[in-house]
Image (cartoon, rainbow, N blue to C red):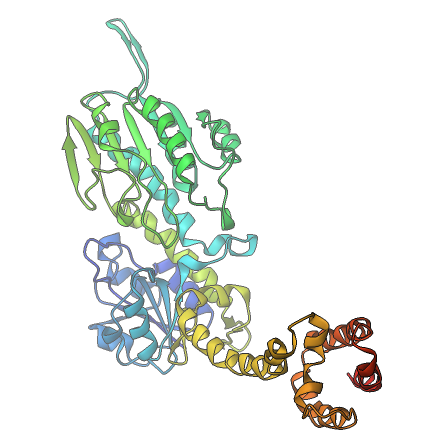
Length: 487
């Protein structure tokens, strides 16, 4: 079992998917580890440190990947860069599939089983494998550090002989993992912190960290599935915007963290709100990678508008790569451990495991994740659905003759097959023809609903039949009993 660790080629990415600590543990599980030369340089991990831990250093990506059973990455590599791995090799990392469906399809064609770690379910068992939480936690911390670096004043309150320095006011929008860490860090640095969130349950968490929780009364709760917030309605958005507009103008620092999985980041701070802030204020947009929560954010850049600095870094966790790599590598190790048989020291993947099912994007040359393989499922569904309408249409053919015999009442329409039988004065031929149609009716009567309708119509036909002229009564009554009994 060979595990390959690639050097990241994504611009600005300095993290690495394995550390000397995790390399030693992989080897204990029976794996051979090959790390591409220079893979840990950005995280201050030298090739020598990897060698000391027991890994082999590959001179090139091709040499690193040759014969690999598992490939570890931080960012999704191009499918063409995976040449040389074994058939059905596992690609594990943050694969960012939303909006990159073509790249995911290319991975499927390359024959690798791609597993997106950001899809790890938020359950107790998987907490140690949750890369979103570990990296968001660091991003929240780093956001406050970045803001403090460009803030022109001290953050804590200081009482000196020369006078008192007021504390900075910090406002955190979104009390998820990143938001809560931003609150805690800003409090440690002495700021007066307030926060808001569309989930009512977040209020207790905010207050437990010593911050003030604010929430509009027009918004009761917007909790979604998996611990995320749902998308707000227009009325809720307007109420939330009104609350923010009145509060943000008094703040020195603002941190926005709102993200909705698979969608662009919602716009929470408008240009007018930015312009209402005092010069020297700072905004850090932690959602910049998905377009940003601030109307003026430019992803990957730091800009100044009307004296307000807006930081739009797209990889805040990557600004502290040594710590970020350490946590990320542990997340991957915890997950991969569940895929290996410790006794046999080889891969033993349970494809029905809830963790595996939630994270697998591609397998056996196809995209299998429900969120991205939906079109194939729909096509199959349409194909299977075609025979059903045909059967229903065939079963309703007798009903289409109703208008011809329903000039007076609905009961005459139910007796239409008798008139169609040849319209002879003798009633005997009618039951025979009806009997001849029984197989077709029963074949289509595989649906219980049609049998019920037929049975309901037979008794109803008896009452109107008595209203017919006396001369026709015998003819109607004779077939009525056998038809109702057969059906």
